[in-house]
View (cartoon, rainbow, N blue to C red):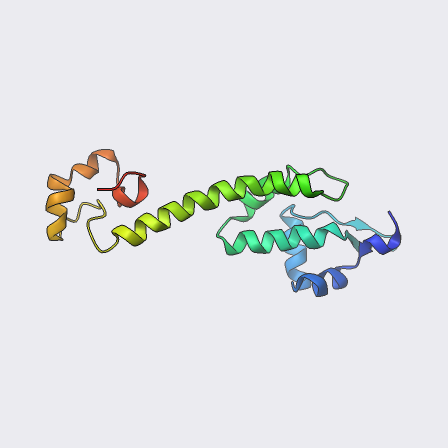
Length: 150
């Protein structure tokens, strides 16, 4: 790799908008793995800009560091991920996001009515959840958490 392909931690921070301490944190979590130069200073691949950007976007969507790391571990180590690599890794996130979107839509559509929580405080609960039948399928707001609606 040419020396121009490597970035200092300061350069990576400037390019990603992250604080140096955040980059070190992501390193300790195994999301990036810098090399070292002859003086022992961290050197990052240019592809780490994309990795960290991916981490930031994934966190915005509510994915945990562990979930993100698990997905990133599917990427080949030691080379810059190509489009096929990113397509494969993003497919898993897309599936998770689709499921979250479906849940949010159910929540939006059901929140002002009976959500199957068992409170039986709304008039509609007597129609949609008589005698708290939803409790048989588990705890919590069953009609939001399950795919079926009342």
